[in-house]
Every structure is written in C-alpha cells, then in structure tokens.
Length: 172
Image: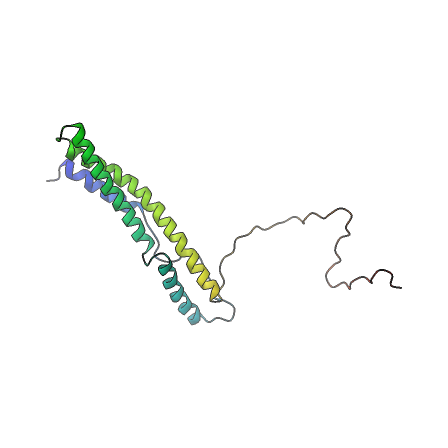
C-alpha cells in the first residue's frame, strides 16, 4: 500500500522527470552548400554532429539535465532529513527528507532546464561552425533596413550604378 511518505517522493520524481524535454541533435536549420550533393551534406552532417558532441564533453544535453536534476533532488533530500532530525529531535527525519526531496526536485527541474539549455547552445554553436567550415549554408542574424542611410551634408549623392566616373579635375 502506498502511504503519504512513499507517494510524495514518487510524485516529485515524476514531476521533475516530466519537466525537461531536450532535443538530441542540432536545433537550427542548415542547408546544403552551393555545389554540394545531398549525400555530401549527410556525410558532413554526421561528422559535424560527432564534432559538436565532442565539444560538449561527449554527453548529450539530456544527460547534463538529468545529472543536474538528480543532484538537486539528492541534496534537497539530505538537507531536509538533517533539518527534520535537528528540529524534531530525530523523529522528523523522514518528513524532512520527503519535504527536502519535493523541494529539491522542484529546484532540480529548473536547474536541469538551465543546464540543458546551455549544453544545447554550445552544441549548436559547434555544429554550426563545423557545417559552415564544410561549405554549407547556415543561418545568419541581421536586420532589414527599409529607409536609406543618412548622407553627410555637402556631399553629392553617389552616381547611379553603371555611370562612368567623372573626368579628373583640370581635364578639358
């Protein structure tokens, strides 16, 4: 039979495990480079995924998240048990451990998400660099400007494209 002391840790573990969903590959679009076949793209993609994985220590972003979440839950349990034992003269250790597990798991979910996001970002940067170096097209960030750039006062506007240059000064 499940008692409250067994149900709380089980619910906390399920809650923490369900909060983090991490992709296992790059999270951006890369397109084959000009003149590259799809088979070349696939080969470079495989090599660059391996390179990116090596750059983050050979572990997936999900493993970083899992380790961070479990560590927080364990630390919370230990601190809760110690606090419960100290407050209630040794009889509150079980309650303190359960409360510590619950709070540690909640904190662990946030820590796991942050850890996974950082690992994913490092993976994406390494993957993107590798694919670009292999001659493929990667996304670039920029702004589209709709108004003309301001001109300096006293300077004539530039000539339209295709216009021959003016003659040098003093030429007749």
